[in-house]
Image (cartoon, rainbow, N blue to C red; front, side, top):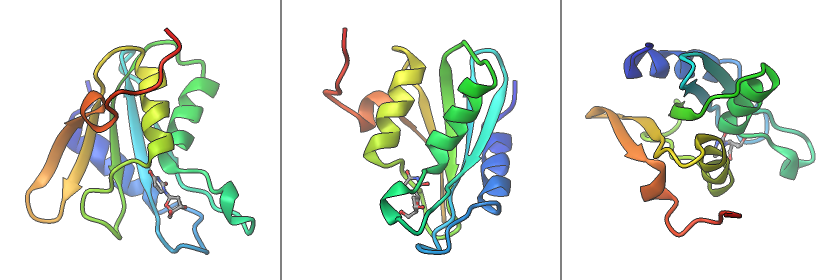
Length: 131
Ligand code: THU
């Protein structure tokens, strides 16, 4: 299984592909599923600013469009512009949706300490669920 460090390297690599001429805030994400497969995504902006797509949702969309049926277990997120680039609220809800009750790991890099791990249940408490 790919390591947390390797997931972070993939997130860094794909952050270079970000299309972010408006914010100039590149983000990359690499999502690992129970199948052992991982999927990358970067943020993609638009001149109609509200249409920006976050890196995390792009990575998860890539997984779903690739036919991934297992649960999301980890996601590494990186921005060269931020120490510990936490996912936005919408992306937290997406991470919860596709981890299907598994307490998915959020892998972030701190400028000083290196990799830190957080859990979706901690960063999205009292969340909306249909069941
Ligand atoms: N962004 C992400 O890609 N992920 C997040 O979780 C938060 C924000 C992007 C959206 C936009 O292109 C840029 O970062 C600045 O908000």
